[in-house]
Figure 1 (tube, helix red, strand yellow):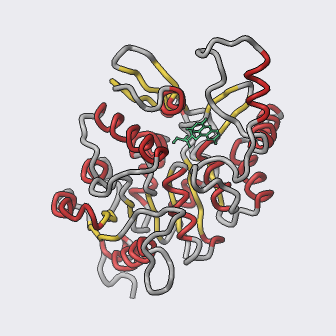
Figure 2 (cartoon, protein in one colour; figure 1 turned 90 degrees about the vertical axis):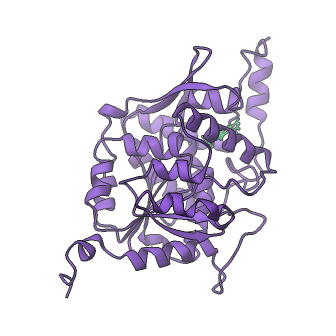
Figure 3 (cartoon, protein in one colour; figure 1 turned 90 degrees about the horizontal axis):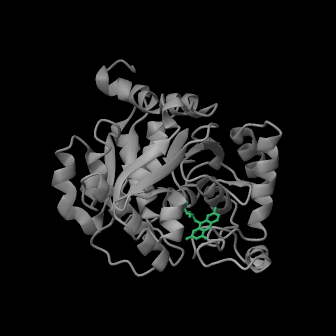
Length: 343
Ligand code: FO1
């Protein structure tokens, strides 16, 4: 079975890790958001690609959600000591010592003229990542936000440096309109048996992928059912500080688009893109609203964490079984458009 997953970093990679417990990793292609990518300290850093690769190679710091397990930050501490920097000038994006090797390898490759997709494949192979990892594009696309105070910030500056603590007027995916999908992206969507939209920030992670010309058309044309997993679970209190920051960012971005921080608001952005939506059981009250948007809805415990999550009788995350059942139930779109044509 050929599955294509579209998503960002932390939330989506939790789902991909659970998915490869149940399906052949070799049949899975992951199309990853690169709108979070940034140039910093002269290096090209691709947080969502690296989070995905580290998660699938078993090297991720699972509690933190990004970076490598057992990481040290001596290079950053040394960098801070090099200058009498004001707090405003001090390094704010923490690159771990081992993580730096990834950024050095990538930046060197880019400077030699190799495309990001090729470098990503090399990194993934070196790390032993089973699924095929594709950046959404080889071109530079960067998500920027305009605060109500009038500052234009790179998404990472808003998210990390300002702790997602400011209201926004606008979100833009700079460069997206001229970007081309990375080699293999459209082909993978076109030949998939199932397409998944991961539980990622709808505007900062899924939005940039859908903004790459050709991706929406490929999703509309594929015979594969397109199933989205909710990125928002409102009825379960958030206790983890990292998760609280990610929720704050989702809420601020949705508010800037005139939407509430709810599963149904996230689903409304996927009208006409997805066939089905996996809603968290805790938010079942939103089921009818999402069904009325023309999406099939299935309920599951969608929260996946290092500390444990709901598992089905086969020991696999319940949400994975729900997704696969939903995909099988919907079946290829051609069959639905022309009943009986498959026989
Ligand atoms: N997140 C933080 O909250 N603080 C950091 O200093 C930080 C550094 C960092 C370095 C490499 C990397 O791959 C990810 C990093 N992240 C950091 C996470 C990153 O901001 C997020 O994973 C996403 O890009 C937001 O969706």
